[in-house]
Image (cartoon, rainbow, N blue to C red; front, side, top):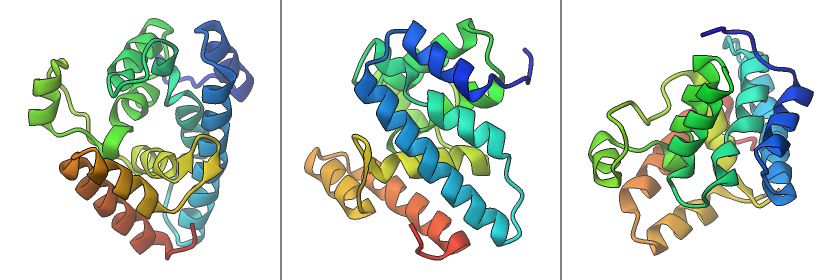
Length: 176
């Protein structure tokens, strides 16, 4: 598998080719803008981050929403990305961005293939975190996402999002 990333325009074409709605595409653009801002803050703090990977990963993180709007869009999106010949680094961002990550037990209950669905790399964490701060195409406080997950009785996901929030804000300060 090639580690050559598509350009921003190629990524947007891939979303359209897979029939993602404009609403989803606008959400992906908003997540990308925020993820790149967070990446800049991390860089300013002396951390090494791959801006190109963050940009393309966040543009494509919801490509699976072309087929489903359930949590399964992560696995569906990873399959679409693999089929399109995208690098493993992008596939990993797509499959690991939901709910602050999906634990192995939850993934098994969901019927997902055995794999890692929790963000590991800094780039994966930044995209997952930025996604949790964007409701539709607008920035929203992390408390809204956590309250929404708790309201849906997804307490483990709410806890993971809280931990991700604490980890990223611990690295950059609470500037988001």
